[in-house]
Image (cartoon, rainbow, N blue to C red; front, side, top):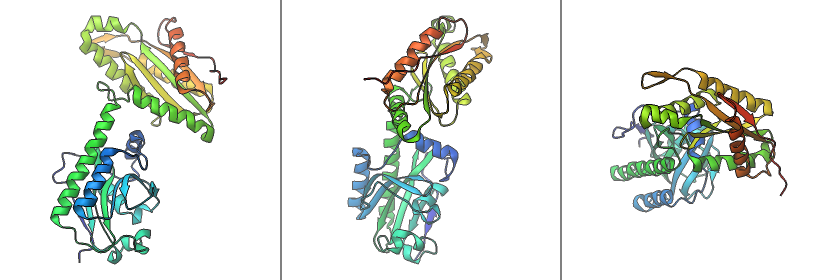
Length: 345
C-alpha cells in the first residue's frame, strides 16, 4: 500500500503561492484573515457537509494552520475548535509547507504520521488534503480523514480538490467585502472589528492602543489639478507609504475619500504613538510625483491613545477624528494628540 503521495497544484490558477507554516508573510495573512474555530459560516459548513456525504468521510475539516496549531473554521467529526499537533507530525502542516495535495492511505504504517497523536489513539487511519488558498497564500487545508486505512479514489480526490477551491473562493469573497477596492487596505468594517478586538485585549495584555486618523490636506485641489486618476494615484501611494513606515502588526485602513485610519497595539507610552506619527509625517514629506509632475502633499493626523479596556472603541475613533481637525489648523503635515478619553459611563 502506498504510504503517502504529494501532488502539485497542476490545475491551480495560483502561481508562486506563499507556503511554509512558519513563514512570516503567511502568518501575517492568517492573522489578517481573522479566522477562528467554529465560525458558524454557512458556506464553509456546506463545504464540510458536502465532503462528508459525497466522500463518506467521518472527519472533514477546513483547517487554518498555525505553528503546531490547527484551527477548524469548519469541521465535522473533531468536536473541537482547535487541536495542538507538532508541525512535524501534522498532515495539514505538510500541505501548507509544500503547497501540494497530500494523501496518506495508511497512517499507521507511515514512518512519520504513525506518531501523530490521533493515529496513535486509533481515531484516524488515513488522510487526504488540499491547500486552502486565498490571495496567493496557503492559509491552511481542506482535508478529510477516515478511521481506518483507505485508498482514496480519483473521483473522491477530484471532489476534494473542487471543494478546496470553493472554500478558497468563500474566503476571497469575505476578504473583498472587508477590503478597500482601490488601495487593497482594510475598510471601515474590518477596521472596526480589529479595533474592538484590540481594546478588548488591553485587559489581558496591558500596554496601550493608539488610533491615528489622518487625511490629505487640500485633496480636492489635487483632484481638480490632476483629475480623479491623479487623486487615485495619491491615495494608493499614501496607503503604500503608511504600510511601509508602520510596524507589520499595525493595521492601516481606508475609510473612504482621503481618510485613512491606523491601529497600533502594544505601545508603552504616548511618546511611542507620537514617534509612529512622526514616521508618517516623514513619509508624507518624501517627494511626490503625480502623473509625471512634482507635487507637495501634506497630511493632518489626529492621535488617540488608551490603556483602558473600558473605553468604547468608537469613542477612541471619535477622539482621533476630532484631534485630526485640530491638526488641520496647523500649516503643513502635523499631528495632534487628543486628551485621554474618559472611561466614565
